[in-house]
Length: 501
Image (tube, rainbow, N blue to C red; front, side, top):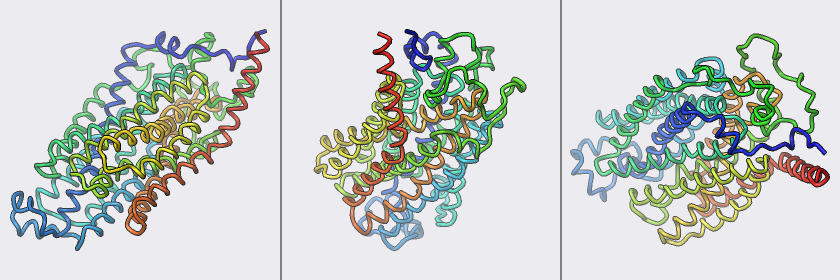
């Protein structure tokens, strides 16, 4: 008994290796490190919050201030009367950044689908590096402190940094098909966590000289990375004469390797005519519209789910070093280094969970199981004792079950959504769909950063973790229709295999 096409699973690793060239490796590394550098510059801000707060508030206990600068200049930098107001403003800056980042993602996705992805990515990296330099280094060197100026710079920075993720996901989607996509994108999506680790490492190394040098180092490295991307990145295989994904329609292996997981498995294999775009036009596909992308199956549900999950993930990203320093009284540099373990857990989680989803050829059930464990790990981490080894272990477990699903939704699942059968023949849907998913997630994260500072100030850190548990549970709720559908498909496939045997 012959199995339907949707059940003829190709070994992920075999399909991946057979089509891998040195161009694939170069694209993987360039996109990986380009986004890592963007995240490193963001992480710098979260890692120096304690130093910035001390700089912006008067403190007779600040023994290092007279050594770094004259008293009159130290006194002139007071923006806030106390540390609480400074902390609230830092949370406001996080919110401002994420809101502008979210708006920029909706725009950058459509722009990336219509312009050269390499140009857009390189421009975003270089111009964002300049803004970070102005924000953290130049203002300190000139002893210029102004709340409105900081807000304006961070709005611009959010808009510029939003060019990164849609572009790199689209480039990766152009080069890597469904075969092994969960594993490849799971490993590749560690770029954000590697960027966090890199940013924390660079900040902790130069923080003793002043927080302005932390911004200087990360901005310089990011600008250099933007230049390398401009001259070295290939956005699609056709630029070097390789066939595009899905071009070999006569090969069943290639067809199966490039059919995304988000394709309609219930549809007949012979039904190839239903598409948002006509496929008999010229060889250059046109980008789909924003509202067309929103109407694609799974886009809205995953976007809402990612809004809740990214809120939790980015709260750890922005506030974990501050929490460790504020709650346990640990030194800022030590808190920065310890926070790396959350990202280590996210790297491992994204890779392993992506590999499992490749084997099952279903993403939602893997996400659901991981998020259920995330609820338990959040509860356990909220009660972590004042012990660095124990805290690091629980932090790594928490990162595994929260960072892993977050990486999967923002990368592999976004690529699946942008390459499903309804947009076959239009690879330019990738950046638009990625921008919608990540943009909606960033709106949730933006609201969350303000709520975290508000909850912490009025109720304490324990209620912040209760809030995280609520948001993680909401993520499961939003993808529950997809979980039910994919579990039914798994059971149906199992019955068919049993009959075939």
